[in-house]
Image (cartoon, rainbow, N blue to C red):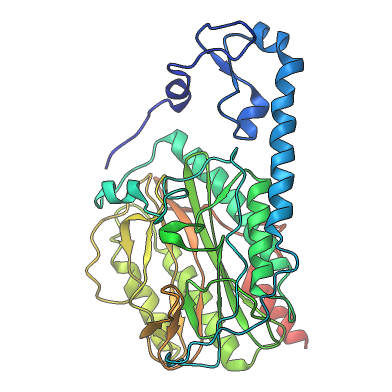
Length: 403
């Protein structure tokens, strides 16, 4: 368990020169507005006095960043691009009724927003993850504060996506909201270009277990859609998701989503220092099987911090062999995927979309968690401002009973 107390601000200052006119002194401060907007190269000054004397020229940097962001936003709407056509995969044996549709091009992120190592790599390689080699880290107090901030942003972005879900919208429309809400908060949408994933969030409809790619599919009354949001800000990632009901769903679907929500809640309640990560699978499986549902085995929860995915692995099925014990400072996700039928999965020809092999529905919920000295903190918890309030499914059930 390794502590990391590196002063990142000092590292950024090292070797930097003042940006003031005719000044080449060593930088000792940064423009607060540039820090807020992640403008790096032109943000360094040797003193407050030098910064103030160069303000009239320097504020043009802020204007330029705003103009560039506005251009990117306009481009990212892809108005006039037709995504209403279904893709034809003649030789693929679909397990259920859902089909892929055409997609908009990959959306751009303004250059002033800090990005993870894979963002600009042609193959989307997360080099930091490759180097970590399963190392389980305890975060420093400074890193924990960063995690709280990025998880707050992640919650706000997921809430914004959830607020537009209704029959008649495309899953691409959800991606637009995610992308723009991320940029507004100076966040990079973590899925974008991760191993070349083409979108800013995952939208998994009905029989899709996870990693559904937003496209031209139009949500219909009675569908369910999981929206998986991950964002990167100030060097760390947040990761969370929820399954939303599209209009009124049938009782079997309601039972699936309710039980999935409960499995996550039960697992979270057991988290505290000393608990083995492998034991969470027993808790989740017990509740799922009791409700005649199955637990997906292929995908699991994971560590999340400066890396999008890292140790520990957190399987959701019973009698797994995961290693590691919870310690204060660990940050990780629990994200059970629960199916109506078999637990087995298959992958579409896009190499991402994972569906149930029998075509029956799947649901998922996810939170990013912090192990504390006495228990656990849900960093991505709902708030009073979340759609339907802080207690999501309780509110859904109340509305259902009124019908």
